[in-house]
Length: 392
Image (cartoon, rainbow, N blue to C red; front, side):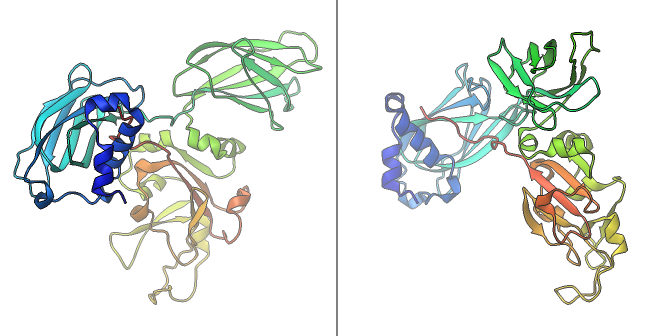
């Protein structure tokens, strides 16, 4: 916990922030991010309503560019009787409150092209800070931009160990044992991709890369230098999170059912269980003991009827519920105990979902005790809107 004396040393004026960036960063982290964790100064401790000056700067959370025209509201909290301030950032993304009492405040930021941001902070002395806003429809580092492909020979057999190069050989990789490769460090635009392997004729193709999308290609190599069919190209949205946990590879293998982030946004569900509505082999089961609860049951769970009472002594549900994993961690054992998905999962935080009705094709990390099916949920890794950025 940071005491007031330590916090005061980190809270420097604007000129000292420019000359001591590290110190200013420490002040921002201490005064804006863990706002609710700090022992905030009460009105009685505000040194007889001492008046100070603060300067803020609002930047784009992705590009770092200043955002002009942000509506800024600084509202008093605690015991201060000073009214709130309504300001607007200038062309440099800055705003200044020339005279404000020491105390507790809430900062609210709004702009038509950015997600709104709200946070509590404590003013202790004159100084400056920087905070960020996330553009609407964008998340920092969330989407993959690049090319995913499969290499085969003329007989459609998968080729591992093929060299794949882009950018005049500056970016490269190899296909794995499944004939697959990923180039995820490409900027949007046209790229000449070269494919080569000993014993096969080299090949080069021009492939367009779209920002925030993955271009899927299927390429064949010939033993002899003969004319080949054009490569097959399709474009899809892929998230870094799901790419890293092999979500897309398992979907490509064809076992189970898969819901990705694009599917979630297209559905616009109000609750987590709404995502499973209309999926073949999935039942939304209302809780007979609680009218507002509903659970997900897979096809095999309708056939396996658990016997005996629940752990809380109530009669059984006459359904067998799937096990639930969140980011690879078992969170619901299934069987006679349902998973309360609507209570502990927010659809905005979900990157993808895998549904396995049986153990056929079930990934090894989810095997064991899954006789009524498995649901694997992967959450997103994103920055919070309005989270403060770099100190200055």
